[in-house]
Image 1: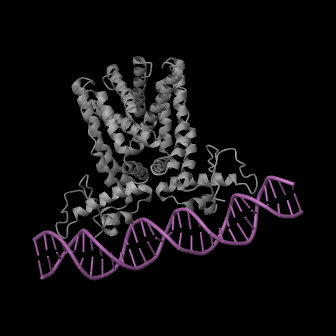
Image 2: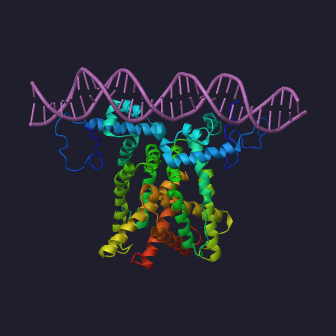
Length: 232
Length: 232
DNA sequence: ACCCTTTCGCTACGACCCGTAGCGTAACTG
DNA sequence: CAGTTACGCTACGGGTCGTAGCGAAAGGGT
């Protein structure tokens, strides 16, 4: 056997062929508890050691699991750490604060506090860095983090449209495409600005900054909608 | 002697005390050519191997220099790579295209093409990741990249103000502080959005995207300036 | 010229980590 | 019970790290 390798806990797909394969109905099943212990141990190790000094042997010891068990599920450090951290992003929510600007402010502050956690900040950038030379990791990031968290932007837009703060999406195929581009653009602007402020500039994302940023973004969105609702 | 360690080619300050120290006037001087060769070799290794597989021994071999010579100048891989990459950001310029939106578009596309280079993309994120657990590296990034490239935002604002596209900065100490915050905010928004789009979302920063992004940003800036020139 | 200081290349080294192989045992299925 | 797979353990070759120690080279100061 070549090696079934891990299944991704986020997508549920297994490596060889996500297809509804027989899924190995026989033999001893993998310990779900070991999965949990390993991911918990990975996060703990990230907190104490950071990405650079985290070792597979250390994680195995913390999880009270043999090192070989790690390699049966994850091909390398990158994928393990990504899976360990990606779930943290699911904690993000979009609180309904009544108006779009307040919603943006809220999600910005929430995202900032997530990035303030040592395991998140040290792992996110490292995994992205590795993904520049690892195609498989790149698609994994997209499906486990990027596409997943765009839900926040989509929800925010829907709410704003329901409130009349933004015009509804134009109909038709071209309209849907434009809306998709807009979601992607807004997502990159928000997430990018917060990450850059917090990790590159290394300055605090406090309420004042969140307020000024969301005012800037909201003004841009509202102004564009007014000028050309077609979404040119 | 404890070890003078390297001088930073960007700031010119030496580690022990940048102060106008005696600067060791005696003894054999360090080979400036070796500096160049090492940094060139580092960039070449980044292109071929990426951050993760780059080794000090490999860099030394490429530069035709003993490994110990590397360690006499840089304390570790992080600082070496940062110095090797930081100078690339100095190539960025702000072309005068006549109006603010076109200027933003220009710098966005330029920044994107810089980030498209393999040595830049693989190193920038990795160094930032390491900086989350390395205070010295963090301040080095700020001085060698962040503070240095804010010049682009400052210049762009000045041009726009001269053209009347943006109101002049309010006078007084408070006004200067507000202007500084604005520069920081704009810098994080532009750099963050481009980096996030290119490296995290892993989608192309093409002309269409640059155009939509700069339209969004410009509308926000102009709208805010109109609403409250005080810079609230 | 002469000494002093510092750098350079080289070799060697211990410590550490990686990822895998091989084995015997445990757990679950039919 | 037989078949299949996961698990723990040990051991290993291969690689990198960062340092120490040496003799030789290249400058500066007088």
